Image (tube, rainbow, N blue to C red; front, side):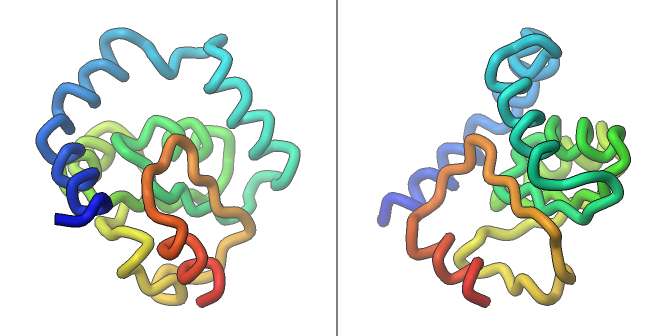
Length: 131
């Protein structure tokens, strides 16, 4: 089994625990350094209502925050369970897929691609951006 498959399998196994940690422990709560850093980076590169792809969106916390800020956001993740969680909690577009197999143009064009704490191989990113 290659590393990328192992990573995706691990997320599938731990999806519920991760979603609960985000919800219950507030690891993405306002004021946390990583949250503020990613929001600052997004805001320095795009203004609402720009279209944003949240690649490796996980349970969708960033997709939700950006949607609430007026951006047109699509969250994509390879883990079905995390996407399902996002769909239940956030009013945004979510798609199941990984960057290695995603057809970028099927989702439309984006002004910005955000990869916040996303885990994937370099070849996947290169292929996606060049498509």
